[in-house]
Length: 370
Image (cartoon, rainbow, N blue to C red):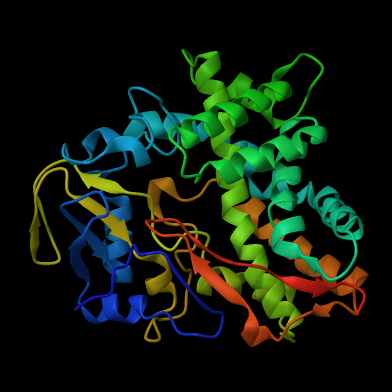
């Protein structure tokens, strides 16, 4: 019997994950019980995954979710709230064209010095040692970078961090309130005196984009950008301070391969009945790609992994996330050469939050000055 791939779990950082090998052993496409009820299908084969991620018949619009699902955990539909994560086809391509140049490799690399400076200042400002980098650094660092790039005042970082934490809170409407809070503070980057990427995005979005839509797009950049880097920072720093001598680029690549920002893709749904890997899937069938399982498959051939997805929805912020991780590694090595873990590496714990959410270290106590 398969272990539940959506159950929240906590285990040691060196303990093997029992879910990924079990899913791979079950075949290239595995039918499982979905958290919201009914069946879902998980893709475990890389070739099939890349086909699925490029197939227009398997779409992201939550309007296509099974009618029996409780929609509380899903985004609004594309008709209700157009966004990079709900639109498909030409509408998605148009919106992506507005975002992509702002986060291109060239634009992001031009911000390298500033991003390293933010990492340095945050680490130097941490309090009495040992410091928990999962509390004082991993969340705040990507948020400060994003606010700085977007032209949003940095004194709003605490409010942004609080809202990001409340996104997965248990109270009713926690997600809606957190989205409204982040979208509200994002508006500070749109005032006439601000000249960051938020203002640039306002001038690039497709005609007909409302002010509320624009704020939601900025929410998406802030929340996804924080989520993409937060958990990965913990695993990267733990690996580095455990004595990994790999170059910064290799360290980032290996960390993202083994601990991608999300273990699964966001939900996708079939727009019609279709055959996939020998199975007949009904219309509105929920489909996921097991990014972590594919990346860590011992039999996988060398080449680009799926840490940031593939196809039309490849993560638009991938360049920024990788630069942030390289900056964290570089600053720790150059400015804090005596830094070490305050507990044995094997004593670190990782928590999978459940559903399609990611895995992060429960804490990362570090002595920055040895």
